[in-house]
Image (cartoon, rainbow, N blue to C red; front, top):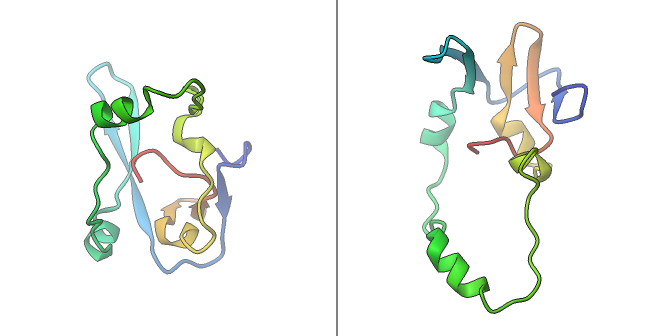
Length: 105
């Protein structure tokens, strides 16, 4: 992720979220970032996302659509400069920030 520019190394961080490695049933490992403390401190959104069926009903009358590439998914959405430092995660090599929206944020 560092080589393709999805994350960036930083010197210091206000928020640090640990990486959690969880074994899957098939023997492979799944990596998660534990945002529990950040979620507690975050102001809740009073306007949740609409249901998919509602969105499809609204856009059904249009001829042209745009969509995210299924390969990269959320990794195509740039993070706001101010918000990048709130979802900092830490590993053995130090703290990193997301330059793009990570899945689950």
